Image (cartoon, rainbow, N blue to C red; front, side, top):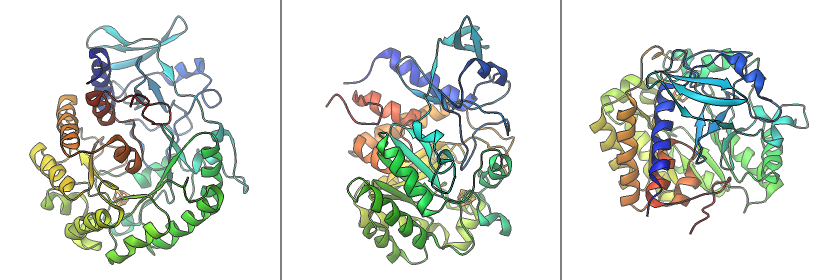
Amino acid sequence: MSGTKEQLEEIRIKNEMQVEGIDFDPAVFGNLELGSEYEEAVYTLYTMDRKSHPGIDVPECFFTKSGYRIHTRWIPDSKYHLEYTDGKFNIYSRQENKTVLEDIRFEKRPRYFGLKTSDGTDMRSVAEDRGYGKLFTTYSNECSLRDQGLMCKFCNINSTKACYGEPQNLTWKTPKQIAETVEEAYSEGYRSWKICGGFIPERRELEYYLDVAEAIIDRVGPDDFHGIAQIGAPNDLNVIGKYKEAGYSAIGTNLEVWNPHLFQYVCPGKAQLFGGQKNWIDTLKEEAAVFGRYRALTTFVSGIEDRSSLLDGIEKVIEMGVIPLPAQWNSNVGSEFEGQRTPEPGWHWDIIDKTTDIWIKNGVTWEDIYETNAQVDRAIHDLYRWKLGIEIDGVGRVVNE
Ligand code: SF4
C-alpha cells in the first residue's frame, strides 16, 4: 500500500523547495497575523535561510494541500516566489511560469509561544516547536569549538546566535525553564522533547542533561517524559547508561560525515578532541546496546560527501541498530561553507528514496522514527510514510493501523 500520486508530487515539490528555498518580499506577511495567530520561526540552533533577517519575522512553515509541512527557507532569487493575491498566499514557479502551490495555509502559533517561564523567559526561546507534537531545546546556542578554530565547516550555530540571539531573546537555558516549558507544551498536546546544544568549554553535558531530566520528570512523571538526549561522543562510554537511568527513552550522536578523511576535514573538532571518528562510531554502537535497536539516531549532513560514501555509511550504521538520517545540507549563512551550494534536488531525492528503502528493508517502524528524531516532518519522513501508506495525526500518531 502506498499514498496517492498527488501526494507523491507534493513531497517532490517539498523536496525541491527545501533545496531551492523560496523568495518573497517580507512585507507580504503584513497580510498574515504572524506572531499572534500564526507561528513565527525561532532560531535557537541554526538557520537554514540564505538571507539573514534579524528583526524580521517569517513564518515557521506552511502546508501543501495534503498537509505536508514545508519549512520557510528564505533564499533570494529562488525560482519559487511567494505571492499574496486576491486574499490568498500562492507559490509561483518562475521557471515553470505557473503556480505550484495555491492558497497555502501556515502553521498556527502554539499557545505556549505566548507564555513565559516563572523567571520571565519566553517559552518560545526555550523549546522550538518542531511539528507533530515535537519540542526541541538547544541548551547552549553556541559552540566552544570556535575558540580553537575547530568548528564543523557546515555549522553556523555561533553566527546564528550573533544574528538572532538578541532580537529573539535566546540565551542558555536552565533546567527549571525547560521543565516549565515542557510541562506547559505537553498540556497543550506535545508529547516528545529532544535536547541538544553546542559544546561548552567544561563539557558538563551529562550532569546538565541529568538535572534537566529530573526537573521535567518531577513535573510530568517518568511515563510521559519522552526525552531524547543528543550528545557528543564521550571519552568514557560507560556514561551512556546514565542517560538511560535518568529516564531518557532515546539518544543520538551525530556522525555528520562517513568518509573518514572527509570527517577529519569537515569536523576537525569532533575528530581531534573527542577520540576521532572511531570513538563517534563506538559511541553509536554503545548507544544501541544500552537503549536498544533503533533507539539511537545519527545524522549525516547530506550533500557534503559523495553518494556512494554516504549510502555506505547509512548501510553500516543501520547494521549497528542505529537509525541513520541524511539531513539535507544547506550552506548556512555564517558557516565556513557559506556561498557553496547543496546538490540539486534530484540528488537529494535519490538519497531519501534509497534511505527510506533501507529503513523499510531493515524493519524500521514509524514509532522508531518518531521516538528518535528531533523532527519528523522532513521530506524523507513524508516519503517513508507515503511508501507504507501510513497516515498520522497532528501529533504524529498513526491513524490508519
Ligand atoms: S560540534 Fe560541530 S555541528 Fe555541533 S555545534 Fe559544534 S560546530 Fe556545530
